[in-house]
Length: 249
Image (cartoon, rainbow, N blue to C red):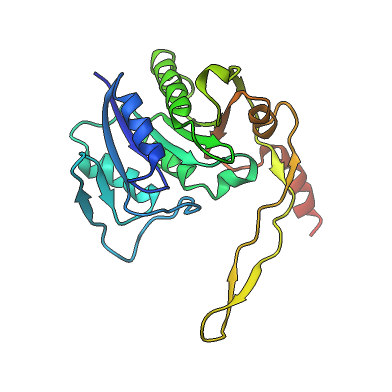
């Protein structure tokens, strides 16, 4: 039987990770290692100044006082009896599309698995009410099964976003590119009880590029979006132009 490592950024008690683990357990041996609290937007951060501690929960899950990347790194290096065949991160409570993928702890957990040489998938549920985690879990299992039977290039992560619909109402799966947002709205300023200024991040910018071939547009139409992501951020199409620019300095 194959071994799957499951993690997330919403925390070890989040409903998404439970739905994902239960569904994947039908096709694999599942180990769940996840943050002991909500670490949304943690991105690829690692804990370097404090020790990591684990807590074995009654349901067999392992809670870690670290980031999503910490959890995957620790699990693969120390906690798994057998190296996982694949890392699956999620199911995130909310979208991880477009520019948001740069901030996402869900995507980062998958990316950490990729850094350590394993196939990796990030799964998110997209909608306002976030009811149908089971739909996302079913599609995640289908994609995992397909990836194991028909491997793809090992230099990419599959970023999966599932519309919050009953599984029978989802229209299918489409391969997409990342969309984009307008710049974020302003900060929200308030005061604490002592009258000191405090600040909250404002709402994200509205969708700017939500064409039919993007993750935004595809999920809006009721399809599951799969976007291949790479960890190499080099803008290869800009190298020659930058060389010309440097030569003018």
